[in-house]
Length: 287
Image (tube, rainbow, N blue to C red; front, top):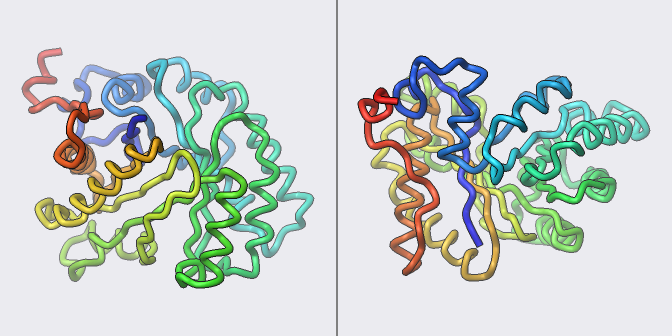
């Protein structure tokens, strides 16, 4: 059992001459990224229909054991209340068909629902899960506070997902909301990231964690310690979690992921770190 670490993107200006040399073209960077990280969130599929040729180029350039976690189109997850079920289902089927050729490199595809979608829409959520027809796993992220009541609604959600073998996405935005927004990146993060309780409950084989780190890196230690312990427990239970680490500006996200992986080693004797990053920009500049 392993932990797959990833970011919300595979390139960032601050990562040039660290994760990849400046001589590497932007189209080649995902290949270099895949030499360090074993997964990535792909948000572009949420906003638009990515051409099959582009999907194939990404597939071909990453390492053989890499796994993409694509987000379902917003026409499927964010338009449940104003579109017909027939149209939603058709978009979902088209999206699944576009991913089918990539099956050997797919991680848990993500259905990410908006905060406006309350428990009255749970039947729609489950119906989309039931339509999933690929041989790879599926994950669900909900943001309405009714799903975090630790009572009947959350129990129904968790039981339903577990019965379908669908992973719950666990959002941990506690770090970015732990202080006032004293810089632009925190202002942006607090405006865009959901402020929901963090309930680390696994419902299937590949629990998905989305950790949103604070720009003051030492402030993250207490939460990283909690996650290291939980990840070690999941490994002991035979689970293989996916962990996507963000930070308010994403510059330090790789560093936070490495810190988390090192902390897992402290909780699990014999654990071999999954994430080995270059120590310095100078080291990468020699490539």
